[in-house]
Image (tube, rainbow, N blue to C red; front, side, top):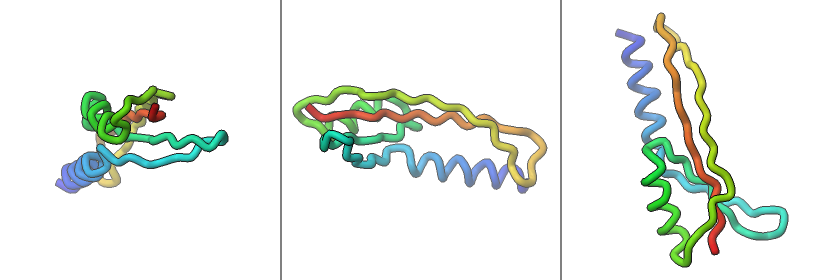
Length: 89
């Protein structure tokens, strides 16, 4: 039961952060955005279009997987994270 609660808590935490966008200033003074795409890349593209109405370029598309063993659980679970770094035109 405790393992299910831990998994549920992790899932809610990851979903809550799914569409955050963080502005980043590059070395040459341009403003880029990092967008977490855990709810799907299509939603990231929609968020990018809202942030950059004149269009955007994808600087980097990052996909990562990590294995987490819940504190009270016996079975490891894999967390997949995905994010885009975009630059407005």
